[in-house]
Length: 195
Image 1 (cartoon, rainbow, N blue to C red):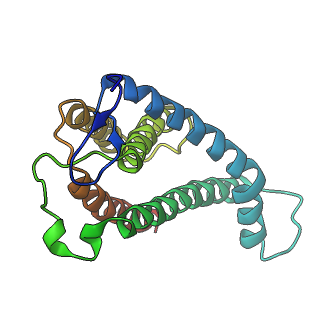
Image 2: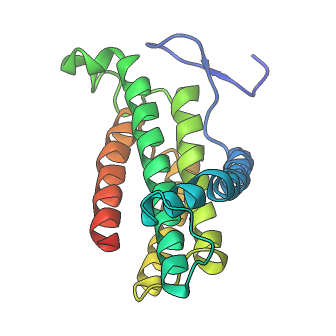
């Protein structure tokens, strides 16, 4: 064993233990989210918003009110795209786990459950999204009256995720389940917020 992987018991295979250096992956995800958001905004969401808001008619002039709606539509589409993609990814992770079919397996090995690469990658993706969200709130997103609350939510969530990851408080089965619940709530809150 070279020290970079940890061979574990019940699930078999090498599993890297949590390490602070893993957060470089979260930064890569944050940059990828910025790029994806920019491309999707420019080539998909804004065009789709214009088409929907103008009822298919080609409009040469876009007023200030319509531009605000286009921006809100683009932001909502980005969040819907992210949350739907994440939900599908989580389900793909869960389906591969024996505890998804047999609840007796859920606590097997607890509290020393393996942190599989798929869960680590997912965790760093989530952390990267919250890092991206901090930058987006400061520079890109429309400022809303709950700006301070959302900013503190993203900062605190990033700190808690980082702390729980580095200190080994993450348990893969609990984390995947928690993310399904949490992201579903975020998605519901976003749809209510945008109404």
